[in-house]
Amino acid sequence: MFVYELGIIFLYVIDFCLLSEFFLKWFSIEFFATKIGALILIFVEGVSIKENLEKTAGRSVPALIKASVKWVIELKSTTK
Image 1 (cartoon, rainbow, N blue to C red):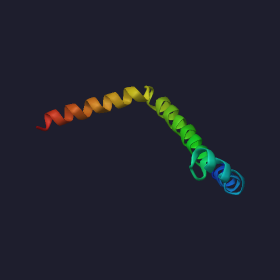
Image 2 (spheres, rainbow, N blue to C red; image 1 turned 180 degrees about the horizontal axis):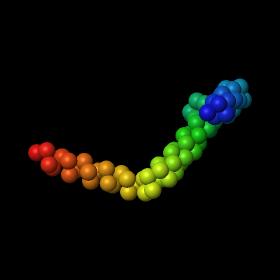
Image 3 (cartoon, helix red, strand yellow; image 1 turned 180 degrees about the vertical axis):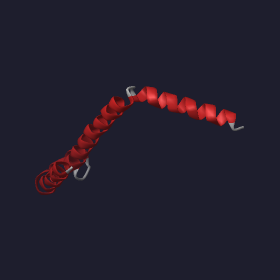
Image 4 (cartoon, rainbow, N blue to C red; image 1 turned 90 degrees about the vertical axis):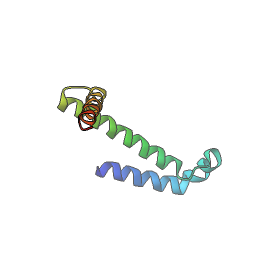
């Protein structure tokens, strides 16, 4: 987590000092490089969480979601 935070801070400083003018001309988005870096880190952590859930549960995440939805539908139909 510390390395991720340092990476985002350094990317922000570089973006603020050097890249913001160029990216603002091309994309009209402030701190574009910082936002892309954050999205990449979020994606990496999302994949890691998915892999850990699959390893722990022994089933894929879509199968777990499908089973949960089916359970909620059955629970809802029995409470009426």
